[in-house]
Amino acid sequence: MNNMTKKTIEINSLLDILSGLSVRSIFDDDLWKIYGFRRRPRTFIINFFPSKKLYIRLIKRDIISMGIIDIINGIKKSNIDKNTKVIIAMGVLNRAPKIYCDKG
Image (tube, rainbow, N blue to C red; front, side):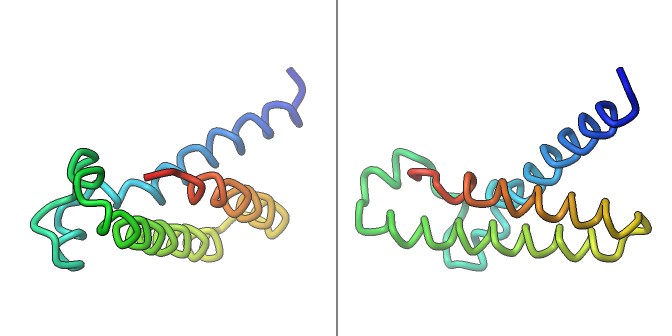
């Protein structure tokens, strides 16, 4: 395996980790309390009350957006070279629409 392939694999695994970190906060009950919920809404509750489905989807997108902004700020403050920062930031932003396209 040459050096470029190894670096590509490392960047892809880093992007997987960063994308997961941006979504992780959706599962935090304390964050949902800020939005007026007692805890994170479960799937059966969302399906039982369709009027709340859009509201919950908007909250999820807001939480994911905040997570992505935090990750981009972390990339900007890191000590890696500018070219790698651009590649990593573009990779995170490239995966963001896939996160937003969820049905729930």
